[in-house]
Length: 313
Image 1 (cartoon, rainbow, N blue to C red):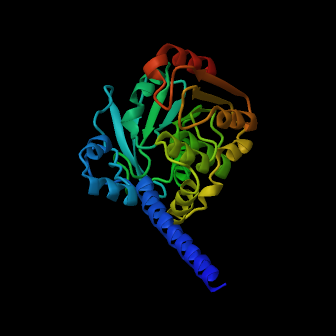
Image 2: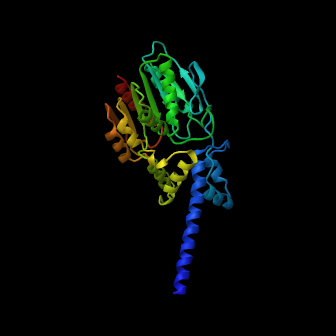
Image 3: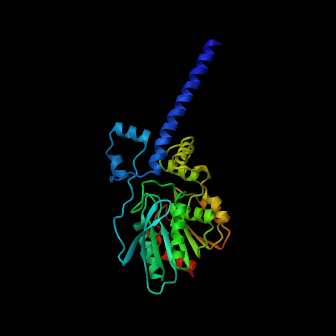
């Protein structure tokens, strides 16, 4: 019996130690995932130069995500201004003659407002003013934090209310990935009433999107994905398991255009179908068979533009 107790005791201590190590690793990875670094070296370049010790360090502590910086600017005349939301956020305003309305564009994870310029160009040609926004932690905005759409929802609200206060009508919200999720949460939280919204590849739940990132790296999702979601929420002050755009969709009643790349490794078709089913207002779903989690204009500029025109009309 004594020998059996020793084996059980060793097993429990080993399990406890393993549990501590997994939480230690998840804690640091969650922080790196939700906080950008001022390090300007690209992740791919950095990882390629790592020694064995460096790779082990990266495995334990995560790899730095460089803070997204503005590398190019609008070709058209534009105005830069800052809004005071839950963080100070920098925006560009680009105007056209006799506008039909205004499109506010929100970038995805690891992006910044310049990454939305090609889409802005399409909207300008269609006769709409555009407003391009840096979420907190990106471009010219404050901080280095990202919450994958959770706190960014208030920044969507601030941008929308800014246009309302300036007498703008026919306001549309357009977001990619994180930007799409932030729009959905803003509509759920604050009951905004835009003319319509355009959503590109929003994930269904925070847990599912973290699992997808593990799968793209060839790593098992259990239990690390759950631990990363837990610690990411703790570090950023919210319950991350409740960050679920598929649920936000149930409180969205305005016209919605939902766009999806069929080869997306980070967002599944089932997530998109659930979001589309839950949307309550007039809705359209358009897919791009050869696109992944990327800018759809790269492969489908004509089709994307046609889908946008049909929706806006």
